[in-house]
Image (cartoon, rainbow, N blue to C red; front, side, top):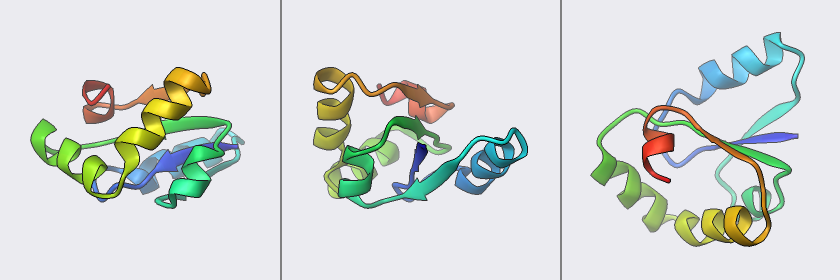
Length: 86
């Protein structure tokens, strides 16, 4: 299943809706545990870079995403700001 990361910024529902129309199972999650165990991750976002990084840091997602992507080799797709945050 694909996990769409909810860090308080982004067009989560439109991404979830489009994946559903394509027949792809996906969920929106803000739980660190769910994101850590995701098979694949989508990181959407629309706002300033500084605000995006602040939100990721405040909820502890920088460590979780780095660990999953770098160490766990979890595939990730960044959309708009999400890609810039890499």
